[in-house]
Amino acid sequence: MTFDDDVRDLYQEVILDHGRKPRHGQRLAAYDVTAKGDNPMCGDRVEVFVKFNGDDTIAETGFEARGCAISVASADLMAETVQGRGKADTRALFETFREMVRTGHCPEHDAGLDDSMERLAPLAGVHEYPSRVKCATLPWHALVAALDGTREASSE
Amino acid sequence: MNVEKIRADFPILSQTIRGKKLVFLDSAASAQKPRAVIDAMREAMETQYANVHRGLHWMSERTTDAYESARDAVAALMNAPDRDEIVFVRNSTEAINLVAHSFGRNMLKPGQAVLISGMEHHSNIVPWQMLRDAHGTELRVAPITDSGELDMAAFEALLQDGRVGLVAITHMSNVLGTVTPAERIVHLAHAHGAKVLFDGSQAIVHRAVDVQALGCDFYAWTGHKLYGPTGIGVLWARRELLEAMPPFLGGGEMISSVTYEKSTWARVPHKFEAGTPAILEGIGLKAAIDYVRAIGYDEMAAHEASLTEHALARLGRIEGLRILGQAQDRGGVVAFALDRAHAHDVATLLDRQGIAVRAGHHCAEPLMHRFGLESTARASFGIYTTHEEIDALADSLIRVREFFT
Image: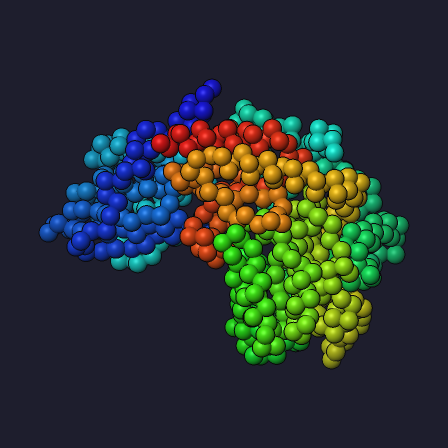
């Protein structure tokens, strides 16, 4: 096996690309809620900013992250896939995503999450690296904390 | 030194990880165990195990002898003048907490200061913060230079007002590899009326420690980094200090007599060893010390110096790789950052090649911040590390960097 073959299960091109050039990796000029996420074990940190539409669905998500390629790519794909979703819908997506990164398999879910789960599928490879699962879920914990009105989340 | 022969003593090293030959470069976090240590602990359990210092039966006496012989081995290893100056604890962290509680709260006065350095492990920062908050002592931090060495002028200046009662400082940094100028530190501290504690967790793995030559007052280290088991560590302290210090934990083993009105303490060192000790771990530590001494510190130090020189040369040639610390006097740990990849990604990609390194803040967050970083990867070497393993690390790092291009 070449070096690339060894690591491509986790570091797929999508992840490398979003890790290197996140599309949503900035603080929003105007936002409604925000929260920080911290992983005290490794020092990774992410701050999430959310702007709502009039109907309380997510209009836009931005983030500032200090962390590894997995956490940055996960934050970026999260920002993309939660756009247009309501709070309950976003939580359902997070629960489904979390199950996928823990087990490597996408669990049964509502058809409305299909497209997003397909988009998030490249992150399923982290299940093989238990210490890295938290890297992928940290931005989601921060997002849910922001939606709940809690200012801080920890992936511990 | 015959590294292949040494490697054969460590059963774990013949393993494959993810289908690759294991390249274990994380010995500074915890070292692997030679067969001698594994066997000593297993044999004790299979043939003579019982509690120590109490049972009037053959097994207990045998086990007590074996456990107490570990104290003799430690005393000899550190050239301690008196075996009763060896206090067994769980690890360096507990040793430092013992000193912070027992010496700090009773023999330092509020308003006196504890002086540490800018390259301490959290275990030599947090106990002194807790002492500060509980007892009103000050916590001072001597800065380090860009090369990762103690700023001796600043260190001396911080001693000038005579209020420092204790200098608590690493003997070798777990991140930078820097070996601190111990004799000079002791000389300056004593000249200003301060006692000296060394955190020797890393140093004792890489060089002979002679507490009488160093002239220090306390020396803390842990067994599991010296090829021994986890759960046993050592605090050495001058006898007169141990005699004057009150106990840290209370309970069985540490008393002379107990009534409901009053208890009296056992003699030193048992006064500081409450409860059933880490018996098997003590026996394992003795085996580790015997193993290390049979190889000899001169041989080990020469091997590690050669490995470190090789690593600095190979890693130093990799574009975009920054090594933390360029101390003149250093041991076998090399922390580094790659420009294009986060330390965790580096560690995961290396792990896929069977190479184990540590990544993170190495329990030294303030030190990371001093160098403007949140985390680094760290390769650390042991007696079983080979030059080929360092080559494998360097070759893989080049590919990691290409991968993130």
